[in-house]
Amino acid sequence: MSGGPSPYYDIEAITRGAQAGDHRRLIGGLWDEMGAHQMEFLIARGLQPQHRLLDIGCGSLRLGVRAIGWLEPGRYFGTDLSEALIDAGYATELDDDLRARAPRSHFAVNDDFDFGFLPQPVDFAIAQSVFTHLPLNHLRRCLAKLKDAMHGGGQALFTYFECPAEADLYQPLTHAPAGVVTRDDRDPYHYRLTDLDWAARQTGWDFEPIGDWDHPRGQRIAAFHRP
Picture 1 (cartoon, rainbow, N blue to C red):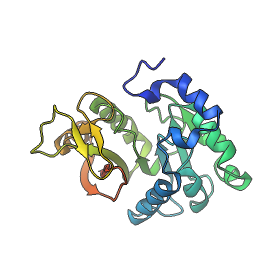
Picture 2: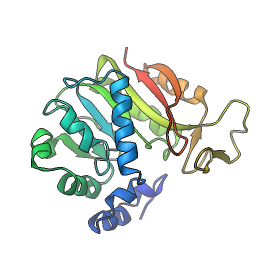
Picture 3: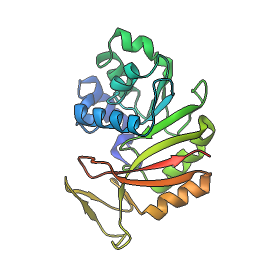
């Protein structure tokens, strides 16, 4: 059973789907589009081949299949709620060369943002379509734990659905262009920019609201900089 704030916590259902070969749809589809879009955005933000990248909510490696080959060997790391999704991506989306560049020990399964598996701090982190499915305190908890897992000067890029200042936070909000409907208290969630800034200040990060990054479902993106 789920027992969590979003359907992604229904591990039994996710496992059945992943084992049935449905691992691309289970992470939201848009496999080629979003994988390439994330990679291009990270490079534009300064990611270089020698950097270490942490993919929070890596799923079945929609980004990983691109990042692993672009980064120097051993520089990509991923974590997710679902071991079945990671296994499906690792087995079917990566070839032998990519698996050699990102050993299975570079992936961790947990539901508490435990980054203790990292051998050393990372330079970049990305959480694409993670906190759109989680309430605000999960984001704050992630930032608190990520701080010690990232080099000073590093940046974490998180997507979110924005509730503008003029909108009623407590009413459903529809986002262009895909018509996704969000709420403040259920999945998918929306936040105000002041919420994200609060989470950053609570955990010792510098907040940069980037905003629109041409996401096909209207998610926006923000950077959290590690001082």
